[in-house]
Length: 171
Image 1: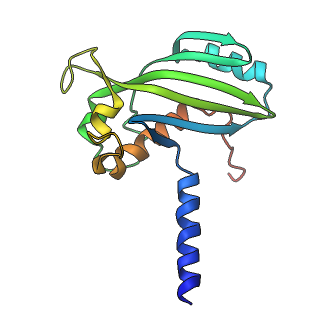
Image 2: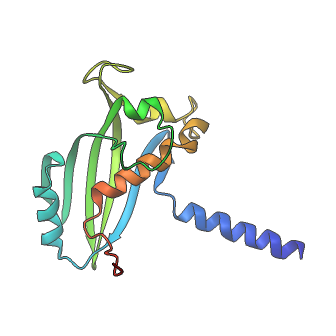
């Protein structure tokens, strides 16, 4: 019985890790997610090119390289009580790489920065995401990040990069 409980706990832990979109490697945070789509690669590229999300957008060797414009957290769509001040008083920006495979596209979001509004961080100043959410040794997330910000950012990043949303059939 003891071994069954240990096996279930191990499987649960591994499956939770597999669903994690944030990755901490060598002190740098990356967010990555694969989306399934019925759209062609050209349609996906056209969607993001027209989206207005990016200030630089370059297609090269079947990949898209883009720079995300500063984006605010949509407080009305968060769905979590008590949004931390740092999320309300900054925007986020960074580099995006889009790669393609059969009926899928992968978003890799790197060099994430927080852009100040003038309250906590000077207006327009960019600070690395890691400065606020990674321990000084660069080996782990700050406990604060894991509580609410990680979930809020994950939901917002997903909303930015998903093209096809599932439609509810019941009405």
